[in-house]
Length: 116
Image (cartoon, rainbow, N blue to C red; front, side, top):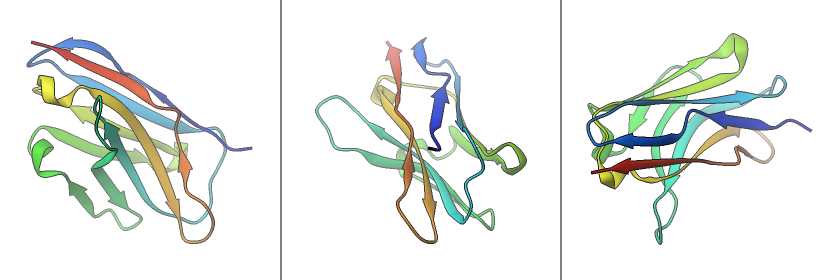
């Protein structure tokens, strides 16, 4: 069974940077969109950033200009570069691969904690 494995989370001071990675354990066919979601404590999960098969990117307003989503299609890997982090970025971050057909794939989540 294919899994998405996230890495790169941790504790960082406000103003710092982190880079999240999400690697698929095997090739996943028919991926139309890759994305990063986050769930802050006590809140619902929401979209942070996404990138389509064609390369179109979308960002939540709260992260525009600070976060950059990218991918390495050859390695089935998704990245999220996060700069100028603040306490509101504290959350569990999940990667998602949405396919043309069939269920989405989700990572297990990685904790990002920003200290002020």
